Length: 246
Length: 270
Image (cartoon, rainbow over the protein chains, first blue to last red):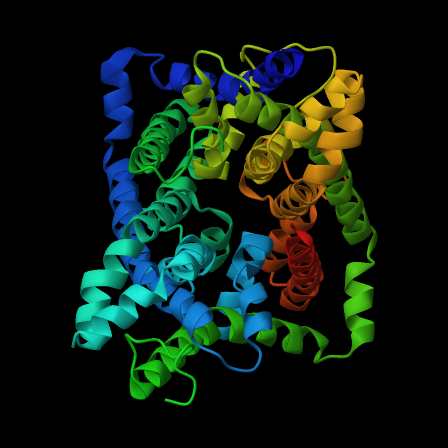
């Protein structure tokens, strides 16, 4: 298969070779040098802030994304078609523009951790909506009607029937959103969050280390982020969110 | 119960209203009002100012460079994406699961890590340092970054369509004497065209919006290696807010037309 060979070569040159270079550079001075660089106070601070804010935002968007998907599928109101199309705006809008947009309307969030959360919430908004929506459309309404006719309260139907069916979609959407949040850069830079030990996330830390010529330190934290990305992708696959051929 | 088939059983009227208000309120505060406000603010000083601001020599060059990068990255990734999707859906080979997982990597990796990775390969002392042409701080490096970030889109849009349509028509074409190449052009490609189109639209949007990776490999030299997103950042940092809003609005309008083409292609899908 010529296509497979050329495709694999393309993937290797474009994606795998550069990533291998990052890992190699991170371990240039051995494992202990890597650990030193990845656990410097500033690096740890940036990583912890990144993970905490990303988790928080992921949780909020998991709930809100499910609510939005529900409203888009089950509710009817004028303008729903337009609203549905606009959900993807954060995917289509450059993240720098997202940052500019948010600071203009909410100037108080500039340079703050709240600003980081706001930016991450914006850029990861569509993930859960778009993963829950198709499952909700497929969901057999007769089961809910049967439960209702047997005397189940709406809250029971939600808890026992709807949420368990949606759970895998919510989790895989949230996981993709989390991966995106952990690596987000453009919007956070515009928000101005780059004060070390206070509002510097991991991607901004890596960028600042590159700027100051410390590529070893940058590579060490980059390897931590890479590991998180790979673990999330493996987790989503284990969950069965994606088929083996697509 | 006026229309029992459309009324969700797990929902009362009050519940429906509160969910609607919650969903629309969140979307409004986070998404719609901020984006609308930028548009209003930009055009508030008159359309002439906006046009002046996006037709400065630096802005025009940034716009051209952005389009150039998309024009390099998207066709290459489209060919790769179709070939890879065909191999993954139709082929059977060892390591398919791993290959499939690796394709998603660009979706999950920080753009800054991508920029750093390219810097380490093509920069001073890197594995591919000393190529006969300059890679970093010029077009090839920025193109590599753009190709990297939008690599998975076409594969991911085409693969499910390929699985859906099956290979019976192709086999029929083969029985009727079509060569594999003929079967691809006359049978396979027409049946996956909307999947390809959707993947291309997503790739173009991602290519135009790329910032972090390009920011590291470009050096951000105005009039030479500055893309539209880099221009927005430079103007913003130099307190040229009106200029930043104007360039942002241009990008937002590109994003909105992307959404429009997405809606159109999605509706055409079988």
